[in-house]
Image (cartoon, rainbow, N blue to C red; front, side, top):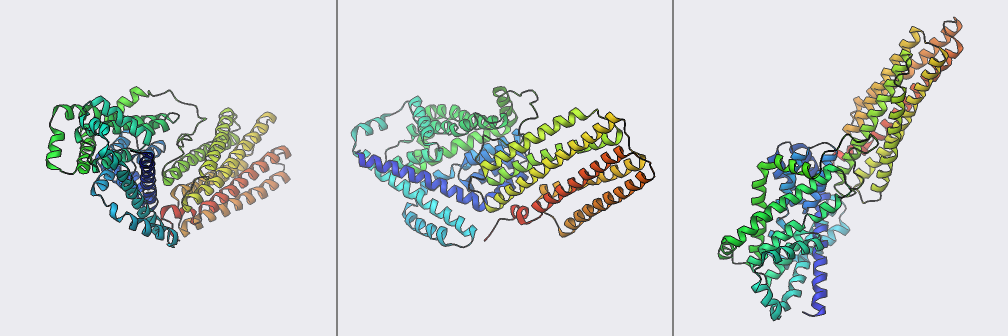
Amino acid sequence: MGINSIISLLGGLGLFLFGMKYMGEGLELAAGPKMKDLLEKLTRNRFMGFLLGALVTVVIQSSSATTVMVMGFINAEIMDLAQATGVIFGANIGTTITSVLIALDVSGIAPVCICLGAVMLLYAKRKRNRYIGQVILGFGLLFQGLHTMSSAMSPLKDFAPFQDFIMNAKNPLLGFAVGVILCAVIQSSSAAVGVLQALAMQGLMPLYFASFIICGINVGSSTPPLLSALNAKNNAKRAAIIYLIFNIVGAVLFIPISMFTPLTSLIETYIPSGVFQISVYHILFKVVTGVILLPLVNLVVKWTYMIVPKQAHESAFRLEYIDPNMMVGSPAVIALQVGKEVERMANLVKDNLIKASEGLLAHDMSEANHIREGEQVIDYLASEITGYLTKINSLELPASVSQYMGCAFHVINDLEQIGDHAIKLMEQNEKCVEAGLNYSDAAKEELQEIYLMDVELLDGTMRLFRERHITPEGWLQLRKKERKIIKKASKAQTNHMDRLKKKECSFDQGLTFVEALNSYLRIVNHTVNIEEACGSDVLVGLVKPDQD
């Protein structure tokens, strides 16, 4: 096997890997949001999650991509680790579809697929058709790469040392080690199995030795998730460990089966094609392991907690739903995590607003330290989420998700400003307490009514952000609330002037009262900003796939 064959082999492998990745990305762009919705809604049952994990991986052609998507759902608290385990098990089975496609050997139509896919990708007007073109192009490149690899390996048929080694190789540990190293280098179990199938096309891979290599490949496929989870959150680490446990259990089960039972001989007897033999063994490995482990999901989850123990309550100065170390995954899941983190920030802002307002009305400073601590967390979250959004916006995102990130920028900024006004209310209360000033009952009633309306309006605007859709009636209702608050505040100022004239309150009392009213009005302005950022087609675009 000369240098030209080696270069052709490497080129074919590169084409195979690129085609598989490109096809998977196209499928995810075309069907990703629907797959996300399916996973989000239907994974409460572990068996349904198992089937959906397989289905989604068949569609996007990557078990690691499905696992990353699942990690996003775990971080966003849409599913727990037990539910995610079923999906990860299913993803392991779904990834075998690539070996079936290779076994069917449709490389003869690869040039046609490349041509058709390129034309659709370059000239189609609708995005959905361009995504389909990307899928077809990736499919063609995958099989063109496989054909190139197979042709490059054909000289090995006449290379006696290689033939002697491969035909006499019986050592299970050697085969397992070869598989682990092969997959760790290539970073794709589908591609590694594809290399074995390319050898089998030339009659250079007996199933007995290939069975041990497949066991090693499956264990080696855990390398990418484990590496990506090294600095990730604990649940992401546990999800990667679940992926590893699945394949280790499969290897422990199938290595002895291959050694001490006639399994490989039976497959060779009933399936004459070497390429199909490898595919069938790979499928058996995944399916049997999945069927055995699925009833033991809770036990597998317990193992992960033994390996990555539960920690004591962590500091509030952290991102609960976003994992900054996981910068890859479904754009829809990334948007979901950002949304949950922004909602968390909004809840902290609302909590501070309520505490500051109640303290102002009750002439009480007991919550002052809690309010200041809450403001520090709000400022931290604003900085961290904004930094994450900046990084995310450097990636290629669908237009709807990119617009949503822009909306989140505005929401974060206005929430931070509302938090600042809660601090100002606390400071007004501090002045009153230090000076021994207290509001009249009428002033307290006016402030309480306006502050409660502010809180209600904030809830409504954040519901708009969360639900990503608003009806014309809902929009009109929010606007009416805004005008009602402004009218109430104007009336309160008029009443305040009357009280001053009647000397029912002092100038200093009146000054803090007016400052408090101004803060509540400024809060209304910021909720209007949030509504304007969220009420456009930006959020509706996340619900419906965008089209040109």
